[in-house]
Length: 152
Image 1 (cartoon, rainbow, N blue to C red):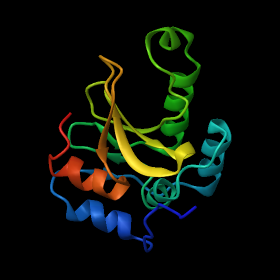
Image 2: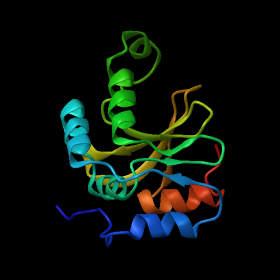
Image 3: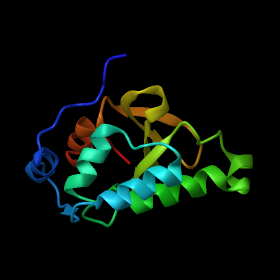
Image 4: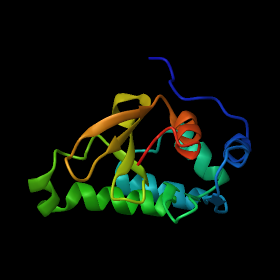
Protein backbone atom coordinates (compact mmCIF):
# COMPACT_ATOMS: atom_id res chain seq x y z
CA UNK A 1 0.00 0.00 0.00
CA UNK A 2 1.33 3.44 -0.88
CA UNK A 3 2.37 5.82 1.90
CA UNK A 4 -0.28 8.55 1.97
CA UNK A 5 1.66 10.99 4.13
CA UNK A 6 3.25 14.14 2.81
CA UNK A 7 7.05 14.24 2.75
CA UNK A 8 8.21 17.30 4.62
CA UNK A 9 11.68 18.72 5.14
CA UNK A 10 12.70 19.59 8.69
CA UNK A 11 11.25 22.97 9.59
CA UNK A 12 8.56 22.84 6.92
CA UNK A 13 5.67 22.58 9.40
CA UNK A 14 6.86 25.63 11.31
CA UNK A 15 7.37 27.47 8.04
CA UNK A 16 3.89 26.50 6.85
CA UNK A 17 2.15 27.65 10.04
CA UNK A 18 4.06 30.93 10.40
CA UNK A 19 3.29 31.82 6.76
CA UNK A 20 -0.46 31.51 7.33
CA UNK A 21 -2.65 34.37 8.59
CA UNK A 22 -3.89 34.48 12.13
CA UNK A 23 -2.20 34.43 15.49
CA UNK A 24 -0.73 31.13 16.57
CA UNK A 25 1.70 30.11 19.28
CA UNK A 26 4.05 27.25 18.49
CA UNK A 27 5.39 25.26 21.43
CA UNK A 28 8.93 23.83 21.65
CA UNK A 29 9.53 20.51 19.90
CA UNK A 30 8.34 17.29 21.51
CA UNK A 31 10.88 14.92 23.02
CA UNK A 32 11.28 11.45 21.57
CA UNK A 33 10.41 10.08 25.01
CA UNK A 34 7.05 11.93 24.93
CA UNK A 35 6.31 10.57 21.46
CA UNK A 36 7.08 7.06 22.66
CA UNK A 37 4.87 7.49 25.75
CA UNK A 38 2.04 8.79 23.55
CA UNK A 39 2.31 5.84 21.15
CA UNK A 40 2.48 3.36 24.03
CA UNK A 41 -0.59 4.87 25.71
CA UNK A 42 -2.57 4.80 22.46
CA UNK A 43 -1.34 1.35 21.47
CA UNK A 44 -0.12 2.55 18.07
CA UNK A 45 2.28 5.14 16.65
CA UNK A 46 1.05 8.53 15.55
CA UNK A 47 0.71 9.14 11.80
CA UNK A 48 3.96 10.29 10.15
CA UNK A 49 2.79 13.84 9.36
CA UNK A 50 1.55 14.44 12.90
CA UNK A 51 4.79 13.03 14.31
CA UNK A 52 6.87 15.28 12.04
CA UNK A 53 4.81 18.32 13.06
CA UNK A 54 5.16 17.53 16.78
CA UNK A 55 8.92 17.16 16.35
CA UNK A 56 8.91 20.82 15.32
CA UNK A 57 6.21 22.10 17.68
CA UNK A 58 4.66 20.07 20.50
CA UNK A 59 1.34 21.82 20.06
CA UNK A 60 0.00 24.90 18.33
CA UNK A 61 -2.39 27.23 20.08
CA UNK A 62 -4.77 29.53 18.23
CA UNK A 63 -5.46 33.16 18.98
CA UNK A 64 -8.26 32.40 21.45
CA UNK A 65 -6.64 29.40 23.15
CA UNK A 66 -8.07 26.76 20.87
CA UNK A 67 -5.86 23.73 20.34
CA UNK A 68 -4.98 23.98 16.64
CA UNK A 69 -2.68 21.01 17.32
CA UNK A 70 -2.49 19.39 20.76
CA UNK A 71 0.72 18.32 22.46
CA UNK A 72 1.62 14.63 22.37
CA UNK A 73 0.62 14.38 26.03
CA UNK A 74 -2.81 15.92 25.38
CA UNK A 75 -3.35 13.71 22.31
CA UNK A 76 -2.81 10.62 24.47
CA UNK A 77 -4.88 11.92 27.38
CA UNK A 78 -7.88 13.14 25.36
CA UNK A 79 -8.04 10.01 23.20
CA UNK A 80 -7.85 7.67 26.17
CA UNK A 81 -10.57 9.61 27.99
CA UNK A 82 -12.89 9.50 24.99
CA UNK A 83 -12.24 5.82 24.31
CA UNK A 84 -12.56 4.63 27.91
CA UNK A 85 -15.37 6.76 29.37
CA UNK A 86 -18.38 4.46 29.77
CA UNK A 87 -20.83 7.37 29.95
CA UNK A 88 -19.60 8.67 26.59
CA UNK A 89 -19.92 5.17 25.12
CA UNK A 90 -23.67 5.29 25.76
CA UNK A 91 -24.03 8.68 24.03
CA UNK A 92 -21.76 8.44 20.99
CA UNK A 93 -20.57 6.08 18.28
CA UNK A 94 -17.20 4.45 19.10
CA UNK A 95 -14.17 6.71 19.03
CA UNK A 96 -11.65 3.89 18.53
CA UNK A 97 -10.98 4.49 14.79
CA UNK A 98 -10.45 8.22 15.38
CA UNK A 99 -7.24 9.85 16.56
CA UNK A 100 -8.18 13.24 17.95
CA UNK A 101 -5.40 15.83 17.69
CA UNK A 102 -7.08 19.26 17.95
CA UNK A 103 -10.14 21.16 19.08
CA UNK A 104 -12.19 23.96 17.62
CA UNK A 105 -12.59 25.76 20.93
CA UNK A 106 -16.33 25.00 20.93
CA UNK A 107 -16.38 21.33 21.96
CA UNK A 108 -15.87 19.97 18.44
CA UNK A 109 -12.72 17.96 17.81
CA UNK A 110 -10.52 17.21 14.79
CA UNK A 111 -9.34 13.69 14.06
CA UNK A 112 -7.30 11.52 11.74
CA UNK A 113 -8.03 7.90 10.80
CA UNK A 114 -4.63 6.21 11.23
CA UNK A 115 -5.97 2.64 11.28
CA UNK A 116 -7.33 3.17 7.76
CA UNK A 117 -4.07 4.75 6.55
CA UNK A 118 -5.95 7.79 5.31
CA UNK A 119 -4.42 11.25 5.64
CA UNK A 120 -7.86 12.92 5.68
CA UNK A 121 -8.95 15.12 8.59
CA UNK A 122 -12.45 14.85 10.04
CA UNK A 123 -14.34 17.05 12.48
CA UNK A 124 -16.41 15.41 15.21
CA UNK A 125 -19.43 17.45 16.24
CA UNK A 126 -20.02 16.98 19.97
CA UNK A 127 -23.70 17.97 19.73
CA UNK A 128 -24.90 15.47 17.13
CA UNK A 129 -22.00 12.96 16.99
CA UNK A 130 -21.45 13.57 13.27
CA UNK A 131 -18.04 13.03 11.75
CA UNK A 132 -17.49 15.31 8.77
CA UNK A 133 -14.59 15.38 6.31
CA UNK A 134 -12.86 18.78 6.45
CA UNK A 135 -9.47 18.40 4.72
CA UNK A 136 -7.49 15.91 2.61
CA UNK A 137 -4.44 16.02 4.93
CA UNK A 138 -2.86 17.71 7.92
CA UNK A 139 -1.11 20.48 5.93
CA UNK A 140 -4.35 21.44 4.20
CA UNK A 141 -6.21 21.31 7.53
CA UNK A 142 -3.78 23.88 8.95
CA UNK A 143 -4.10 26.08 5.86
CA UNK A 144 -7.89 25.90 5.73
CA UNK A 145 -8.37 26.30 9.49
CA UNK A 146 -6.07 29.30 9.80
CA UNK A 147 -7.47 30.99 6.69
CA UNK A 148 -11.08 30.48 7.83
CA UNK A 149 -12.11 27.93 5.22
CA UNK A 150 -12.90 25.45 8.00
CA UNK A 151 -15.61 27.01 10.16
CA UNK A 152 -16.08 25.87 13.76
